[in-house]
Image (cartoon, rainbow, N blue to C red):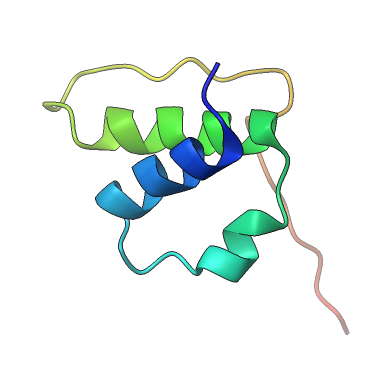
Length: 65
């Protein structure tokens, strides 16, 4: 398992605009899932990403009014 620093370094290599202080607020498991997702985004089209139970398949919003 990667350390938190290693995970954050991996994330910022792929997404240099990610804020380090923001990333530091997350737990290792959350950072690992984000890094895994980012790594899939740089793969050729057609590569699949396994959605975990923590990730909603459908997100909806309600009007504030």
